Length: 121
Image (tube, rainbow, N blue to C red; front, side):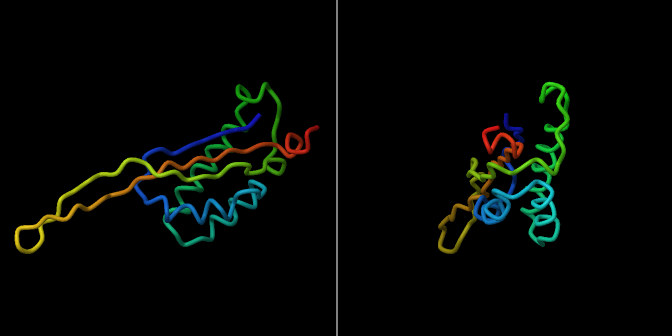
């Protein structure tokens, strides 16, 4: 049973957040929070919020059938960043031309699972 959280239409390019998601994938949840806390990037703040939301979902007794799940048992099994829709704006240029400026968005997804589920116990 995985605990998931996502942030859709995040106003940042997926290219900027994807390396951070690669850094925390496969790590314990508390270790991943420590890694993101000391990164200077704006995307790290967004990814940290999504990770905290997934941790909150794991602590919710309605989602995990009344079981208590500690943060030390949770592992980041899925951290991915997909490209979202783009805002397209027109910028006037010289000689009457127009350039399209693409303001990119991203969908940030995080999934946590307990270490027992990974071992198959």
